[in-house]
Structures are given as structure tokens and as C-alpha cells.
Length: 317
Image (cartoon, rainbow, N blue to C red; front, top):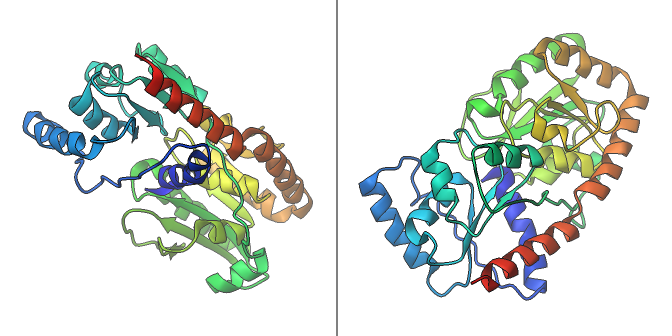
């Protein structure tokens, strides 16, 4: 779900154009969070059945990778995408990941963590992003979302979990609203629900590109992330993007040139005020972000790397 789902879907047209037929199976309802002998046995059977007839199985995330390891081990070509940094590097997880023919890390920071835990067969493929054709303008996007044309709009998105730091988004927004009139915060909660006090909750069915297009500032206060698709979208659209200083997100942009970073949440409040009060700087930050996205987050390059990786894994004996 969320950024991982958006990334996976973005690869499909390019892979199929390269001659790789793709079938996506959303397995959230049958691959549970918990593990254990009885759980693993049942899930393994379901994963093996789902993988029949396919040359390669690609697990998105550590939970699906665990299930694939239990189901296939080394008997069938499979790999996994480490979209986020791992919550744990316990030997049991690393041992199961070692059965994969490849582990695709979406940042060098994620690869370093897995490397330090003796992970094997790792490579870095940075996710790509492309602005969809026909995306409405900022003005039209705001109209669709019921926002005033002259509002100051701060946008965020993520799952309703602690790592996403929705609480930080709301706390900052409360302070900014008190200081800057006509400020609106919108947060798209993916894969769950949560009552928001100061921000407007955005329905998960709203096109995230339209949401980001409506923004003045894209705020990503996540406490843990290997990559942030909302930030990448903001960069591609030339928005001012502000993220917590995480090693993985630090790879996405250059501080004070193409992206703003914060360490202390108190300082972040003043940084947002500076952005909203400095339209020239905000515009220059957005222009540099767009250039960085074109150079670092190219979707064509990403698709080529995934196609090469899949062919290598299938062809390896």
C-alpha cells in the first residue's frame, strides 16, 4: 500500500514493454504480520500456489519476503524489494532474506544496514517517478480538493503508524496555523483511518498526484523510511519538500538546495515559516527539486534496472 504500491504499479507498463509479463497480487489479506510454525505453514502453501506458472516472484517488503523464503527457499527464483529500512536485523530475518536471488534496496542507507547484518545478494535500485500525463494544474487541483486559490497548503501522506509521525505533522500545523493566516494542512492516510485534529484527512481514493500538485509545501516528518514517494512526487512537480534528516531520505536531495531537512521538530516549525514567508526561496527550492528528480529519480532508468535484475535472476542457475 502507499508509496510501495505506487512504485510497483509505475514499473508495470515499462516492464511489459520490455517483454516481461507482470501480474500483481495484493497479498495483505493472506500474508499476516505475525509469524510462527502454524502460520508459516499455511501461508507457505498459499504462496507456493500463487507462484505456480511464474518464472520469478518478487516480494515487496520484508513480510512478503519472509513468506517467499518459507515457500520457495532456493528452489524457485525469487527476490525482494527493501523499500523501507528494516525494523530489525534479527538473524532469522537475515537468514531468510539470504535465500533470495536478489535483494533490491531503494536506498544506499538500507543496503548499508543489511550489509552490516551480513545480508547477501544486495543491490541498490533507486525508485523512479514520472508526472502523469494530463495532471491538472495547481489551481484546478485545489478546486477539485475544495481549497481556496490563495490558501497556504501543506501536504503529507502515510500509513497511520508511529513511523509516519502524523502527530508531528499535526503539531507543526497547529503552530503554523496560529502564525500564518489561511494555512491548510491535508494528510492522506493510507491503509487505515485516524481522526485528525488540525489537518484535513484526505480520502485514500484521492489521486495522490492531485493532492501533491495542490501543495505549497510537502512535509514528510517520518521517523523511519527507506524512500518517500510523496517527497519524490513533490520534487517531480517542483514543490518545496521538507523531510526529517534520515540517512535514506538525505540521499534524495541536497540540503537547502533541492530539499529542506530538519533534525529538531522545534526548528522544523521555524523552517516551515521561512518557506511560507519566502516565495522566491520556495520557488528556487522547487526548481532545484524538479531538476534533481529528473536526474536522480528517472523512471526509465529504474525500469531498465528492474528488467535487467529480473532477467539475471531467472537466467541464473
